[in-house]
Image 1 (cartoon, one colour):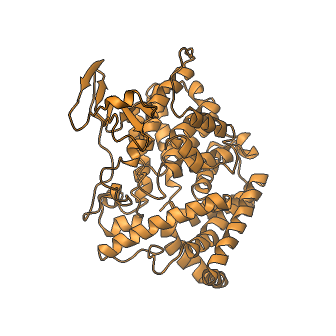
Image 2: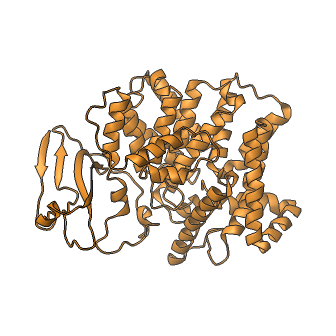
Length: 483
């Protein structure tokens, strides 16, 4: 290893007095996502009110770089018309403040070192002092109940310092025995998951890594349902978890109509068809190939994984909701779903992922309400950008014409309820009834906050033409979480 030191008067300050004063100091080793061959040693000092100075290290104080380096590919959406999608939902930070993203990443590499040692079975000699060890313990306890429908992904994300997607997905892959069964390299798995998490735009209020982790946890709950647990192969489970984790990869925080009317290059690339879903899939394939996660498998098997992964992710296109729902309903009416058939199992996986993607209204109120606020915030951000660019405001994105309650009531009525009613026909279990119960209670709660929206929703149900055409295929299709 080669050590490069960078010290200047601006970045390195020292006060002799702190050597004799009782200070609470926290330090850690982390890595910079923009340069994956570099590790950074950082220190934060929490001083008493009477102390005016302390150690101050900025990223780059001590850099440890391996001699064999590489330049990682720069990924992300490109700005159009002055809109930088990566900062679309970011908030201005006060002068001199440390970016929240940087703070969140401080302890990541330290955790990675410890977990890697434990997974390899290395003896825990002279244990590394993890400064937030209590939080790690709580996160581990939460993972013991990862199959609970009441799983609080927001709390889990805080306990893992913003690494919920990496920790949860790695845990599930291990729990199902997929790492051993498919002889996956744990280092490659870890790197793949880190890159996936990094490629989500956490500035987005809704379409971020926490949403991906939430969908992955929901997918796990569905995979454990009796009909699926008895029929799905390990290959099906691997595909389901990977699709859930990557289904919104590199989401720009705006919907497909926005990309089309701004002539974004993605819209042109995919010919205005499932633009975001195609991009999520191709981004996932890019990371699979970059990390060589399946390079040890025969080429045809690796390509099969990529194709089927794409089939699952493309099914989350909400504009095709009626297509998938009608097919699902027909299978249930004719009772001809044969889970011994690979194509039928794959179709059920598609429906499971669709349910996981829009299951927020079926969560307990405390969780569902937070998701509703976040997705509506993202809609309204897009509406504000459209106003600024003098574009037609997309349905549900005008904060002056819509409220959280009206958006959620319509979404639950025309998109969520029909899907989960059919899922309950397919899998009539306690979980399905619990989800429908939460859905009804949450809808009632929003109705009390928006009486007028409730009334308009009832009017829509009484008018079949309006119900089937306007809310589901136009406004609500564009306003759904996936779009």
